[in-house]
Image 1 (cartoon, chains in turn yellow, brown):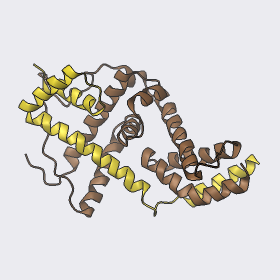
Image 2 (cartoon, one colour; image 1 turned 30 degrees about the horizontal axis):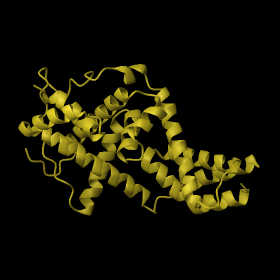
Image 3 (cartoon, one colour; image 1 turned 90 degrees about the horizontal axis):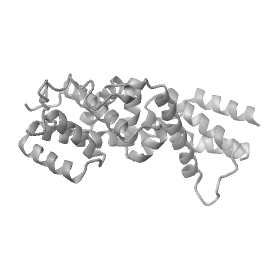
Image 4 (cartoon, chains in turn red, blue; image 1 turned 180 degrees about the horizontal axis):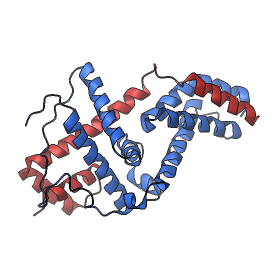
Amino acid sequence: MMNCKQASQLISQDVDNLLSTRERFALKFHLLICKYCSRFSQQLKALHVAITGMSKSIEDDTSIKLPSEAKQKIVKSLESEK
Amino acid sequence: MTTNNVHDWLNEHGDYLYRFALARLRDPHQAEDVVQETFMAVIKSNNFAEQSSPRTWLTGILKHKIIDLMRKSSREMAASDLMSDQDANMDEFFDDKGAWADKPKVWDAPESALEQKQFFKVLQSCIDKIPAKLATLFVMRDVHETDNEEICKELNITTTNAWVMLYRARMGIRKCLEINWTGNHKQ
């Protein structure tokens, strides 16, 4: 019988599509009888959605600009490259 | 590339490239550095294909600079960080029978925009708490930009190392969220 520690490892690997058919089957069975691992699985899914959303919100936030000192530094480096 | 071109591009796309890097590295200084390296590479290069848009081309170079940075930091990673077996250091999460030490709770998704914002703040602070290399790997993986094979190739790590690191990162972040994101937990 698989314990929760082993199941949690498989759940994480499943996110990355690393499970064999047999492992996936064994995990499914564990998830049917274990509500805590089911929650953990839901949490990893939620985490994935959140992290994608957070990156997108930074990328789309046009109020974030390249700091002017950094820009000056780049201009200077470009000049010295000439 | 002519200097004029590159200066125009810096004005036009610099902010976007900075946001792109910041979204992935989450460190303002590192983000500035990779943007600078991108433009330095550009001025030395003559490969711009007129048919592609400058932004797409610049973003492609930036992506490589970000991966280079990850590769460098992974080299600095202690061997013990990489090589330990799958069961190492997970004792805080499970008891000796392999059952959850702290039972995972039900999370409610943040509903309002304000809640969402607060949640991002907590999530960011949790990501900052785990080792930086794990955090970067986690973000690179989970914004779905890099598939596993590419991560392993670029970072010169085995598939096993990659999944152990990702597993650790996820376990650490979720535990931190469970403690710090108190949005209507149900037992």
